[in-house]
Amino acid sequence: MSRIAFIGLGHMGSPMALNLLKAGHDLVVFDLVPAAVKVLTDAGAQAAPDARAAVQGADVAISMLPASRHVEGLYLGETELLAHIAQSTLVIECSTIAAESARKVAQAAAARGIRMIDAPVSGGTGGAAAGTLTFIVGGEAEALEAARPYLEKMGKNIFHAGSAGAGQVAKICNNMLLGILMAGTAEALALGAASGLDPKVLSDIISKSSGRNWATELYNPWPGVMDHAPASKGYAGGFGVDLMLKDLGLAAEAALHSRASTPLGELARNLYSLHSAQGNGPLDFSSILKLYKK
Image (cartoon, rainbow, N blue to C red; front, top):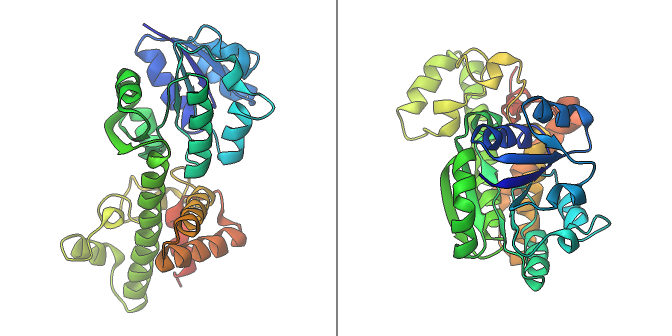
């Protein structure tokens, strides 16, 4: 079993780290929130006083942080973690960040002879807990193969998108489409309900027709249609509005950088921004239905 440093124990990082612990790995963890660290130490992990201490002697270092600035700050900024990581340590960066930030950190790692991949995830908190996440990887094939045994303890699907940063590009393309689909599904269900249709009946019809999509089949935004969906639990848990807004912002940033046109992505970003400004930021992103529902 390997010694793994895990930095960032939020809603996604914590269950991911727990799955590595359950697999028998020696886990050293760090997070700025003591309560988050306690969840892992109660399960058998060792707490580190800071990120630099966490990576000492680690075979693998995994980070799961909120945004680009946190990742750059950890590896290149004040913490300057790359200067304290041994060349033998494999770095797996799982945060969803700007592709340019991922490339910047990966280039700095390569300059120090450190293997690093960007491996953002899809699957939400449920997938993190169940160990069924999808990892979308950017980086060298050899580094991915070295990381595969660890990724397989946290996820079910592993895709190699391309070179450094490619994992981030693929992830934000997926999430941009997800935001568009959810907004469109909510709009269609609200129209049907306003016109007198039962949202569940309409959802069943759509799920067997050409409008079928992930939202209608697995994550319906209308309360009561699917018992397991966040919509039926007051939109608690799941993937937050503000997280979706962040990813749509990353998509807009990527579009600007590559001179691509994303009019529907921009519309979705504006809708989620409006929804968040109305106090719904912490709710699951399927709560976008509130914008349409009478």
